[in-house]
Amino acid sequence: MADINIENFYRHIAKILNILYIHFPTKAPIYVDEVAGIDEPDEYGLHSPTYMAGFYALIWLEEEGYLRYADTIRQDGIDQASLTHKALLKLTEVTDPIYIDTSAGGNASTVALLQPLETLSPSIIEERKMVINQLRVALKSGSSIAITKLVNYILHT
Image (cartoon, rainbow, N blue to C red; front, side, top):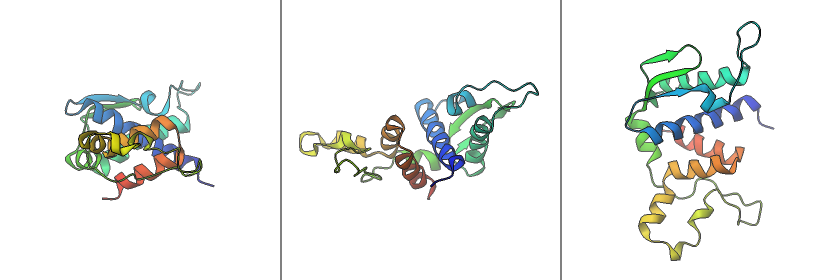
């Protein structure tokens, strides 16, 4: 059984990278609400652990060289954020499917959009094999296993 904090971390990382990719090359603010969900501080002004984990995932990605930002926006986000060269190269990499869910006889897949290959043009196949697009399919599916596998692939450089 996986630790929920690690599953949340991978989900936060996936969402952050997707948001930054959408805005690239423009620098944009990223708010924790977009990553970890809306959270109201308690009577002492403290956010929930999940919300704070989303904030620290942003900081961690910068410390590990996947994003840059100008400043924090309190504990609500970061301002003027963009992907680094390292992150852009990893997200635009074309690779064979990183994760395929075989629980439904191989039919349910995080890269199901690749089937049937023979009817797709090579450029569409290549686009769908890009890591960012596999990550988006994993996010859409909501599969913790798929998200974990893809984020692990991205972080192993």
